[in-house]
Image (cartoon, rainbow, N blue to C red; front, side, top):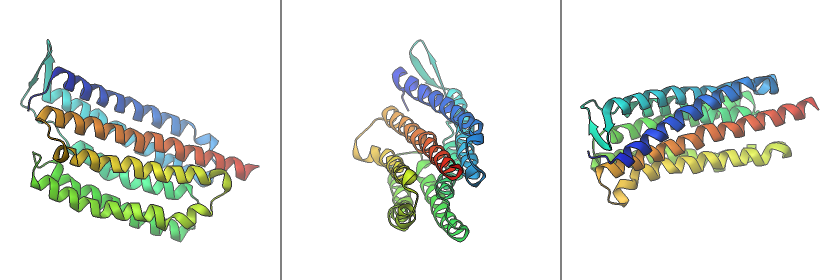
Length: 249
């Protein structure tokens, strides 16, 4: 695969940005735990855990990228070491179910409903990641990637349906002060998650050479991760703080 110097630097800088964003977000969430009542601390702890896991894996992705390519005098050369895309999928396997769980926890549902929705949505999220992985590591833009990508869309669409239909009544029963934020958090999950299949299938829609496809995929996934984890986490933290303040009033 031929990478231009610009493509290499764009991917390099996006990985650097993602790593810094996730570790900074982790500090913000965990240092802010004192602002949250006991009822919502677990949701904020998990929010910080999501960004910490993401930060660790982005650090490993960053290292793997630097091991796989060198850029000297504007010339990018493959070293022979493989760029490990598995780090990204291990990250998603851990963080994507937790993202849904933190949303459920901050809503303050009954224990039985929290467990039921956490298991079903978290399980669907894990299945979505597991089905997408074989296509991502197939080594090309081919039928293998296409088939596994389509299969991973099945649990993805179930999650979308559950967030818009299954949680609607629960969201409408939330206090007026946070109802809009919780609804926004739901839209952020769906909007950012729709970006993943767009990036995944983009090379099938728009013809790209190897370097361009790699840049689109890696930078696109990074943007989606930052929105889905760090920005979404800020919404969860804000909801937890507002609910805590309301309870204390």
